Image (cartoon, rainbow, N blue to C red; front, side, top):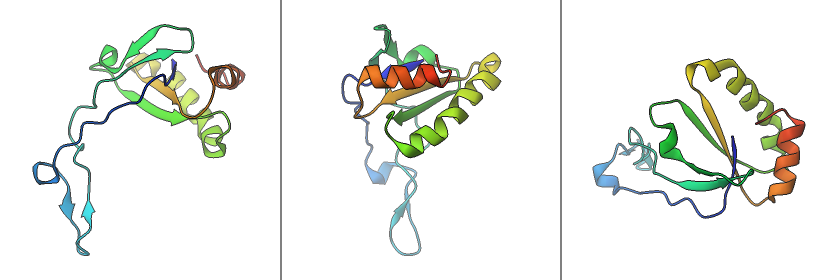
Length: 117
């Protein structure tokens, strides 16, 4: 299901001191404070107007991808997401595409042209 980003997705950020981030040899922090943490909840409106919450997919593998119909790398990787969804849907995989800086009509047309649901 492709999801249109209607609002901002707020990421919950934990202080570095309480995270899995560690200083590398150069002193630069590597890793992410979100590593090994549940993804933050969000709710968006899909292209068909239904509401979708990340928590609706709890316990299932989920790929969340931010994309736009005009984005060249997004266009290149889109068929891989469609293929992964087809190949692993029996194992519960869901691919949520969140439209970024694009309009719903262009995104819906692109998704339909590429076999995404």
